Length: 335
Image (tube, rainbow, N blue to C red; front, side, top):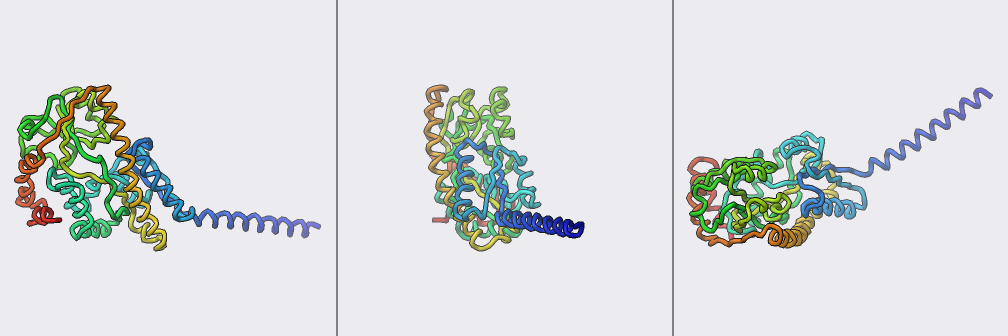
């Protein structure tokens, strides 16, 4: 009897272990990917990242699941990029300039008035020059999934100020907030402005305390940051095109089947189209709120005047060796 009882116990354990193994196998069949962003989930961009995740799950029949971590839950931008390279997270979605450490030529995307419009910028990104940058990123372990580069941020840029800014001459002496980009700060210095680097999250306070008198921003982020409470003059400058890239650890990407790779790329490009739709809707609502609650004044500029004013600076970048010789003319010749 004891022997029989022992055999029953062994058989029970085998069945339990077998069941657990099958359960583990089923779980292992689902590949989960972590996507980190800095945008809150209730913004147009935040909704777009979830739309991307939903598309991936649907297209892969649940074999591939993207879990979105919004609002810097996984850390600041540079931390998340490091995490991605180390493999502790799989993807990070942000502006292309966040990846300029892997190729300094990415910085040209934020040089004021180097690109005529977003179409011109897309030609740069999807043409030979952009493909060279993409390869450098891949060589450094980073792959951009949205190959069409159609995830427009903005969809345009504005300058918020405490006094009206209508021409390039009005920039002279203006204390303007800059982000950490030597290219960007030097560009505004070249037309007489006084750029000051201020963290994005501290810009509202910087305006309130007169550390800066103006800030440039994608129009979609103005209302959430409440800039027009303090700086009610809005100038549509659209000084450079902005987009969001969904980047992924290339080793992880390469480990997936070709079918799953194609699904990620397809979903990322479809998400770009959705982002434009959601952002346009959001911006219209924000503009109405800013007009009714903050009584903003909006100014248009003579864009050619501003392009001419910044043109000399473009070539200074070549003379200083910050971008390759002939790079500016190569960009400007793109049709």
